[in-house]
Structures are given as structure tokens and as C-alpha cells.
View 1 (cartoon, one colour):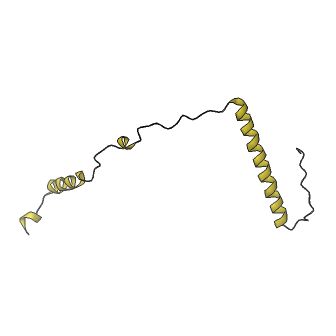
View 2 (cartoon, helix red, strand yellow):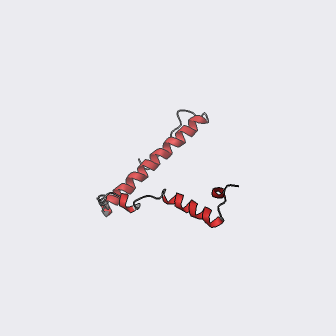
View 3 (tube, one colour):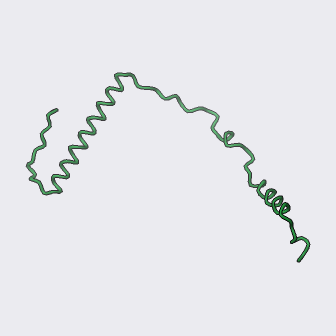
Length: 88
């Protein structure tokens, strides 16, 4: 076998490490972050939180009513079936 092809274990390791060194990035990950910071997040006031929670509840109830109606129609329920809404 040729002398250049006879490489010992440590020689192979050294060769592998030297090949991998060329693959490492020249900069750190942090250096690629933007210089400016994102805008601060505004927190809601208690009144705004209450209003938002009420809106979410109304949306959820509306979605639920629509789902119930679709299920009734899918099952062939009478189209004159009325969903009683105690809140309205």
C-alpha cells in the first residue's frame, strides 16, 4: 500500500478536525441579531382585559351556536328548530 494511504488513527482524527474547522461560522449567532430591540409590548388595563375577555366569550358562544346549528342540519333536524338563547 502507498505510504500516503497508510495513516494512523490519530492522523485520521487530525485530518477530520482540520476539515471541519473550515465549516465553522466566522461569527457567533448573537452577532447576527438586529441591533435594535423590538418595540415594548403594551399591557392591557383591567378594563381592557375585562372587555377583551367578554369579547372572547361572545365569540366562543357564537361559534358554539353555529356548530350546534350545523350539527342539527347535518342530522336532518327540522329547519324551524329554534335555539333558545337566554342571554339575548
